[in-house]
Image (cartoon, rainbow, N blue to C red; front, side, top):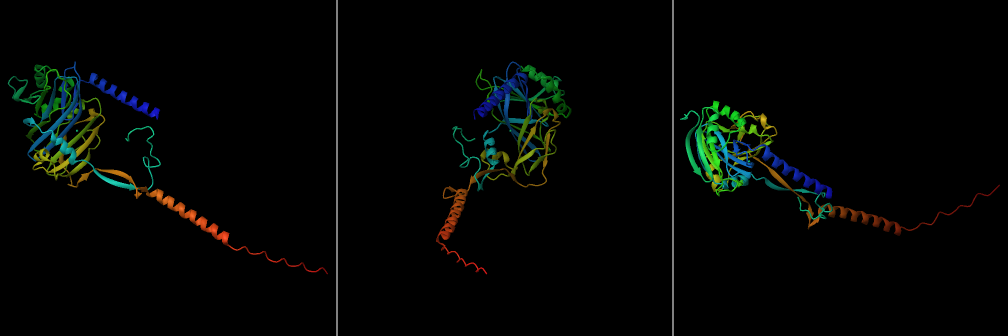
Length: 370
């Protein structure tokens, strides 16, 4: 037991060291649908990214929330969009209501024979608990606004250096790799939402869940920007909620293992915030995908209607030992069989004890000798 505990402690220590080294080596962090840029002298990491995409056939909306850690007091985040976007703050309750909507169904599964954790195999001796057209030829600012802790600029660009100029003017340096990654979006005439993040209190580092942002733009098909994630140097995970009229699926895997549908179904009682967002698009699809090698990501997720609207829901089974009047059924069964066997043996022994003893047959006299 001491060896197991020591191994767990070593694993935790190595994990924490890995996280700290990641902050020092890679100050620019690639998000699932954007890029975070921070002053190289400071550290920031996005520990969680939650996104919900709504598409009604004409317009796309993306609501996303970042949870960050580190000591950075300000940072910039860039998101490419296919058309001009409007930006506003979103209600954070939408993510709690989404989590509740896709929560697994709990079902009880009974078993007869005892397993680990059931008596007599339960062991609590150690006390351990059971175990998301530029005016200057470089950058055009088509809109700028203050939203809570965010300074939001909506930009147009004719080359990747446009964003470099905007970021430098705001005290940031655009990494060369990010400039290269933005080139395909420039070629396709996308625009950009550039967000400068700053905490509410001067001198306070950016930490915890940030206010969610709500982006809206025209779209003739649903697309979730993912190309910038190829800059990540560590494995990436994608968790995406999709609201549409029908069940949706990605057109391709874009360089990772096939996405997995963890929930699909029509919303019945979504709650106020989620209900307002889902109005007109009542079908929710929840996807998850892993990217063990982000450099292989070769495009954005283009979403299409699935072949069927068949519902999908995860089921969590709670295993429970069969009991009769609080007593394990196996114990009663085994005990009953043992009692019956003992009774049978006793009956046989009694019957044998009461059986009369027959006298030995008479010994006949030997024949006379002649």
